[in-house]
Length: 82
Image (cartoon, one colour):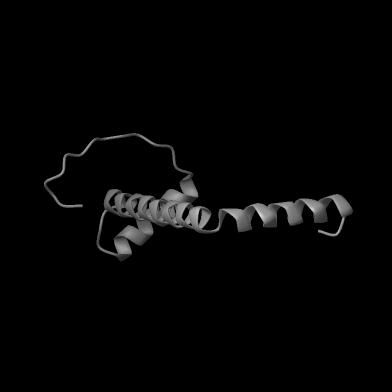
């Protein structure tokens, strides 16, 4: 994120013990809790997008295999072997 992007102020509830850890970590890293949260959210969203891409690719490339695995899994559940 560059400094030219517009920012919006929001209010979120964070458990006190977690917030304390965020403040400590931010101080250790010479940054602000806000900057640390922005970085964490950006990483989370990026990871989520990559996982969704991999999932979509895998489903398209091996959809039949997944269906077969689901059937086997269900069979094992029904027989009590899982």
